[in-house]
Image (cartoon, rainbow, N blue to C red; front, side, top):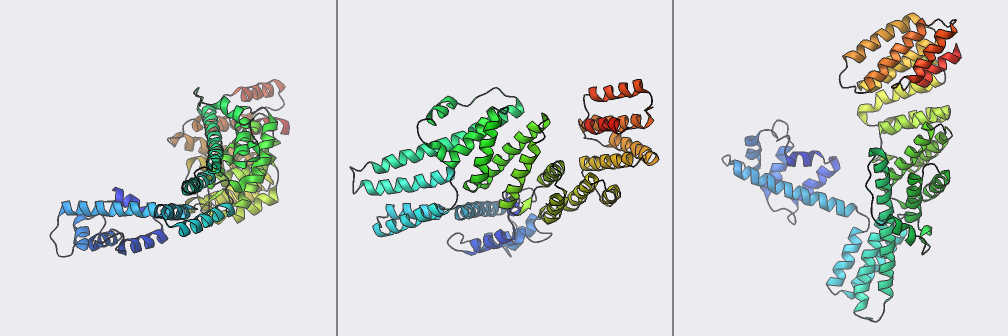
Length: 464
């Protein structure tokens, strides 16, 4: 039973949803079978859900075990669970109930009810902050109902059709621009050569009316131009200004895409040597945290947590980073909370050159993720080197190499960290008074194909 569709569905429900689902099953409007309710309650019991006969006994007390009937009951329960999920989603969708009431009132010929429902739906739509494609979808539904109602009374009035057509243009442009952005980013990442149709048409249409005054269009347009012409800082500047000013117009899914496009663009420019873009990265992260856009139901991804700390350390905003690390510790996924907190605190102390504090944080944490473990070992390596603790460093490097060799599934990280360890060993043994030897070693490090810590290794030549 553990791997069945119904178990997967029920395990996806949180505590509040499970409580509401019981009420849903208890309602005769949705379910009139007591055995289905009892089956659901039995599935939640320990040592019962994986025993079909025990499940059946609780769902149908006193009846002999009937596997075919059990499968039928499980099927009924799954259908009800599907209905429940759909209903929950419908009720949580802004404007869905109001729009449905408008449609039902018109279809039933309830003229007064229709006018009241339409006015309420239009008011609530105008009051909510979203001005994206979803907004135009909802507005289009209401305009359509209003047009159908009005056409019976004023068939000569074309204003409703004009409004519908104008709204459809805004919907198409806002959706099309988003899809073009997604495809452009996808093509750059996977080096595909395909293209989406009507790209030139979009450009031409945007010249015909004041569409750029619409946030859902102008933001996605400048995002698209930024992705298509990354070398042009002007498009990025316009996108950044527009996005940070209009972020409330977009839903969480769109915001995650927009933040990802923005940050990835900045990282690309940083990798090209334009380190000032770290400040732009921080602007996006700070705004996203302030507005809550970077959190999903109150949870901050540990990947985002790491990236924010990294950007803050590059801009040397140490006090801000310290506050961030502490403030968002409990917002992390529970399984990553302690390791992410200790490691990022260690990164901060390392940047401050408080090496003893950084080592203590690294040594008092248990890093189950192999890549995080190696990142921690790399930081310890740098600390020992900075403190001239060469005996400790030598032992650390030997243990590091053994760990890498014994750890499966590291992929290209294996060669990267092995190269780091070996070059560090060579630096320890290097005769710094021999200019030719020093020059040759520097050249080898510069030419090494796989070496993400190249910059740190080369810094040691300036230090010596």
